[in-house]
Each structure stands twice: as structure tokens, then as C-alpha cells.
Image (cartoon, rainbow over all chains, first blue to last red; front, side, top):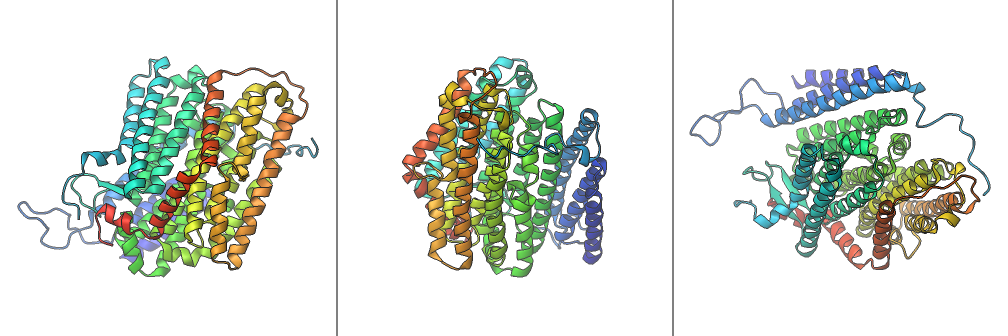
Length: 125
Length: 501
């Protein structure tokens, strides 16, 4: 089962890299989302896959009777999802504001901070 | 195994983070009292500085300190562990934040103060302090994100097209870097089954070095992007000159240094076997970064972009201490980070003063400032000498330690690193003095304006500390050696967390 998931993670990563290599900002952002999900799946798979045995200790006992699913990767993913969601919300608003004020979705046209064809630096004092 | 609750005095480890987060929340509640914001922010930062000072003093006296949240004993709960490196950097970061707030008192426009400038600064300090003091790798990721989101807010605060342009590149590439860090974390957890740093040290030593090296390479890439090491540095000169100078100072001095800190921490303390395998690669990127950074600064005319390139050259110096894993080299790298936190902040603040006085951002349009304002020109010159490592100033001592570290194990890589470090110092000096003569010596044509005393005070304060540490480096060198020996032999660190090595 892990092998299938590993291949799926690879597929997600490939799609994310393909999208992020684009010049269009919207595609880059879609790539960021797919990348986030690929990594969440990666953590999930790296934490080992087990059949549905919820990690709940029966009342009155200190440890569970049988092997249970590992709860830690799920906690990690939950944190990563929440953070990724906030980051993505910010990135979308940023892209929209950049589109409004720079009138560009193509990163090749976003050259305000690094202008092209600058004159050479002075060679004497 | 820790079986008792944390002693009250040990809460000082987490206090810097708690105070910063609480302060940010209080400032948000007080957002209508625009004039009070700066004072509350400065007060909270003073408290944080005080806590960091106590923490650094205790770590210096008695070794690493640790506390674990709740009753989840290590390695299960999230530990906060302060060793000399983390505590020292947190202290420098709090000091820089305080100086920047002093600068902003005379410089920040009212609109920025109303839009949450000070809460964002405190959030940034919370993220940075958390990253320096945490003893858990996943928690480090969370603090990276806290810091990142605060820096996003700071960079777009004024919201003009230039800043939006810089912010797009900064945001996308930094989100990508943290995503790579998270991927490496997932793989490391899958391999070792733990994320507590002290526990990783033991587990990694027994693990298969092949997958560990791949993970270490991914971590190095992620932290390298954060720290702006050469092949992945393009976002830094594209974005760091766009926000106001004070925000540049905060970001330039703190954010990249957290990346450098994480780079040192993971590759020297957590995964030393993988570091030995990756050593030639790390040496090559260090050499190229050291040469390319100041070369680009020589060819740059935008003042703050040029400082950004000097920053990148400095990151190369930090990385150069890592591949050999020698005590002097690592303590040199640590002290260099400490020095760069202070010096880069001061340089960006002085650049802000220069831009304010001349009304230009490009050095081609500046000139004649020496006659008009000799204080600023002295500050700038001192900082240029400090960053290039001219003897009486702070930058000299870490470079001396690095050179000594290279000479202890002379092989071909050591000699290459040594020459690259010396060429870096020369090129940095050329770039810096060239900027200085363009801005200050050349006769100017523009009308110059005056500036408020608080920003100058902030720059003088930071420069004064740099000069004092440069003249009396004993304490700093002692702390650097202690920090490096704890990184190379983490027995004390592991014992402080409560695990058996």
C-alpha cells in the first residue's frame, strides 16, 4: 500500500513542479496548493499506513490492547493544513492586489523591483 | 527522564515567545490608541530583552536549559531547549528589534502604525525567538511559518506597486522553501520516528546514512533558500529593498539568520554523518556564495540592494564554517551570525537614514553627504569596516576563528575555503568603500533634508554595541566556543532535555 501512496506523492509533486514552472501567477499558486497536498500525503505515508484502528485507549487502561494507527502524523498534517490554508489565502490576495496595481499576471512583466536595461554603474568617482 | 514539573525559573526559556505573542495581542486590542502603540511595543521588547539576557546568562553559567510542555515527557512533548547558540541569537534579535522600534518612533508614517506595524513586529520577534529556542523540529517549522506570515504583513504594509512586486517573489519562494522543509521533516519522521532534536541525535547515529544524507540535502536546500545561499538566493535582492528601511533591517538581520541558524543546527548537531558526506557540496556553495555576493554588490547601484548582496556574501561565510566540522570553524560561524544580526540591521538603518536625507534610493543620484552630515558617514564607514572584518571591529573575530579552523585540518577544501574567505573580505571592502565614496565623497547636486533624532539614535546605539563587542570580544568568543562544543558534543544538550545519550 505504501508503494501506491509513494507513487501518488510523486505524481502530485510532478504536477506541482510543472505548474510552478509556469510564468502565470495563478498557475504558480495552484502549484503551491498541489505541492502542499503532496507533502501532507508524504507525511501521512511516512507515518506508516495501518488498517482502521483508531488510536483510542479503552477506559481504565494505560495502553491500548492491540496496535493502533499512529496519531502523530495526523496531528502534524492538521497543523500543516491550517498553516498552508492561511498562507494560500494570503498568496491569493497578494496575487490579486499585484494584478490590480501592476496590471500583470505574467511574472516576466513584474520588473518594478528589478528594472531591466539599467545603465551601467559609474566607473569612476 | 523528567518526572517533575518544570521549575518556575526555567519558564524563562519560553517567556520571550509568550511575551511577544501576548504583546502582539494587546497591541491589536489597543489599535485605536495609535500613539501608545510604540511605547507598549518598546516596553514588551525591553521585557523580552531582559528575559533573553537572563536566559543567556544562565546558559553561559550552567549549560543548556530545557522545558517540555504539558505532561508529555520528552521525546513526546514539544521541548523548548536553549543552548548557547540559540540563547545568544535570541538576545541579539531582541536587541535589534528594540533598536528598530526606536528608529520607527521618528520615522514610521501614521498609516503604517494604524495598520498594525507594531503587532506585526512583535509577531516577527515571537517567530524568531521561537525558532532560536525550540528543541523540536516540527515546532521549528511552525515558528518559521509564524515568522513568515508576520514578514508578509510587514513587506506589503504600505501596499505600493513596488512592494507588491517584491512581495510576490518573496512570498512564493519562501512558501516553497518551508514546504521543502516540511517534506524533509516528514521523511525524517518516517525514518527515525521522532522529531525531538535531542532524540534525533541518538536515533540518527544508529540509522542508515544513505536516506539520512538525502534528507539532510533536502533540509540544506530548504534552509539554504531561507538563508539566501548562492544558487537559491534570487528572491532576496528582488524583495529586501522594497519595504521601508526599518522593515528591511528587521528582515535582513533576522529572517535569513534564522535560516542560517537552522542550517548550522541540523547539519552540525543533528545529522553530522550526513554532513561529512555532503561536505564537498557545502564547501562549493559556500565558496561560490562568498565570491558572488560582494561581486554583485560592486556592480549594484541601488543602495539597499547592494547591502542585500553583502548580506548574501556573509551567509556564505557562515556556511563555510560547517563542512569541516571543526570546533573553531563552527564557533566562527556562530559568532558571525551574531555579528551579522547586529551589523546588517545597523547597515539597513543607516541606509534608511541616507535615503531619507538624500531623497534617493540609487547611489548614482546621491553625493556630497559627508559635508552635510558627517555623523552618518562615520556610522556607515564603521559598519562597512565591521562587515568586511577589519581588525578592531566585530566582523574580524569570527573570521579569525574561521581561518584558524581551516588551518587546523589543512586539506585542499580548507585552503579553497580560506582563500575564498580572504577574497570575500577584500571584495566586501571594495564594494563597501565604493558605496561610501559614491554617497559621501562625491560632490552632490541634490538638496538634502534633515532627519529626526530617534532614527539616528537607533543607528548610533547599534553601531556602538558593534564597536564595544569588537573592542572587548572576550565574552563573545567564550560563548562561541561553548556553543560550538555543545553542537559537536551534544551530551549536555541531550541531558538537559532529560534523555539518556
